[in-house]
Image 1: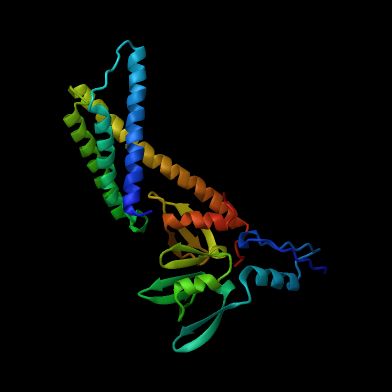
Image 2 (image 1 turned 30 degrees about the vertical axis):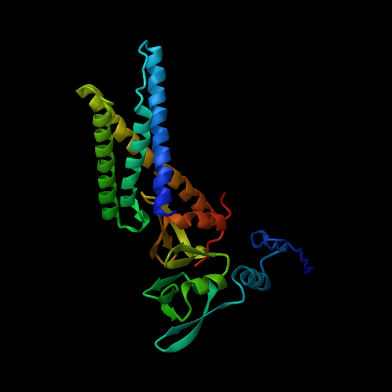
Length: 142
Length: 145
């Protein structure tokens, strides 16, 4: 997948993810007796944040060809870049108004980031099992 | 032994089923021929030309536009490019990165690493990296959905 397509697909995925989380939050708030009203600029800020968050993907280009040290350095830089974008966008668009909501946004961000990587690795481990099982049936005896 | 031929419309559907009382030398030869083709490739070492059987090859690597063929303990050079060899090799040879083809039958096991790539440990203990983008093709060759 070329980098432009990758950024586009990620923009859509991240925007959808943010919209989904906001939707869940709105439902929870509604049934807790606190209705949320979207401002006119909220939908476009979600899309813009999605696009901005997709840009650091460039850092992960050809990630499967790096050694372990390079991989962890790049992933750390990628994570912190995304965090800076989310916090910056939150500040600019007024997603948090006090220290408690700032800390909540930060914790949720790192949890979601770790969840995505762990899920991806878990799926790779499932592939590993299937491949090893298939290799058992064709391996040469040496 | 009675031999029956049935035509199919795609390469992926090709398969041979041998029903026999035991695996005799003739049957093993037939299996080897069907799985690996008629044979091997010409390789070079110290200005001498050798014939390398496909069943001996562990992996083939391209470095600086040169192609190297690795067996259990030896390394040879091939005059052919990687993509040319890829077309000649049998179904158990699969591209695992831009510069490498591996013989699936020589892989002891694979292990997934963070980032989506995998490391394959070969029967001689060598480790080769399977790029994320080639894992899908490897699974397809192994019949994994």
